[in-house]
Image 1 (cartoon, rainbow, N blue to C red):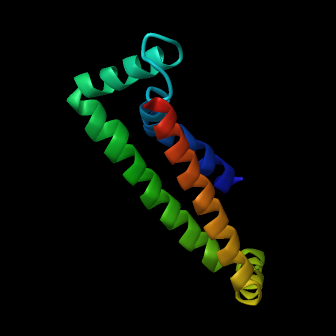
Image 2 (tube, one colour):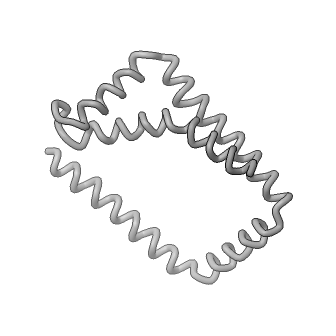
Length: 124
């Protein structure tokens, strides 16, 4: 139950940074006179106009999530035997299927690169 509360709080704390990063991407997808690029630009301008928002919403809150997440994971690792055994099983699967995981990672990377290149070509 405690882990669910921590997870919920972490998602709430990360929301402002995710909103900003999403707005940065979204405003580049189409001309800014059209929606949703216009709204995304307004969000970016709001963050940029307030120096505190950059420090608190984009640095302090994600750092708080990182610290509490690491502490929760370390404490859970020491207390939760099923978590430890599941992690060991996962590592065994990774070792056994390492080549296929590399192929999957390379395929996903190629997909991401192609998407970025195509979007860049369409923008020009």
